[in-house]
Length: 177
Image (cartoon, rainbow, N blue to C red):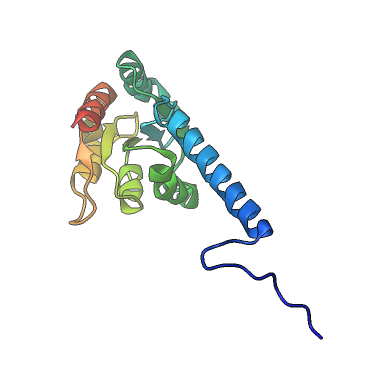
C-alpha cells in the first residue's frame, strides 16, 4: 500500500506549501524595499571617458579633464594607442556604455587614428581632439583631417587643434541634451 498525500479541499494548501509561499512573499517584499531604497541614491558613475594615444598628449588633454571637473561631470582619463594596443582600445570602446560612459573624448596627433578606432567600436558619441607635435605635418593638419574625414557610418565630432577644453564643453552639452 502506497502512502497517499494529505486530503485537502479545493484552494487549500498543505502546511509545507503554505510556509514556502509565505517565505517567497517575504523575500519578494524585502527585495522590493531594497530596490526602493537604492532608487533615489546618487551614484558616482563616470559619464565621460577621455582617452589619448600617448602620455605626451596629457598636457593638452588635461584641459578637458579640468573643464569637466569644473562642471561637476565625473570622468576618467586613460592612455591607449590605436596602433600599439588596438585590442585595448576596442575593448574600452565596446564596454564603455556598460560602465555608464555616455561620451568619449579622444585626443591624438599625427595620423590621429584613435578617435576613429574608438568610434568604430561604440555607438556612443566620440569627440576627436586633433593634437599637434614636433612631427606634425603642416602644423597639425594631418591630425585634423584624420579625425574630420571619417567614412560614412563612423561619425566623430571634431574640435579645433589642441582644443581639448572645447571637447569638454561639447561633451557637457551632449550630456545635457
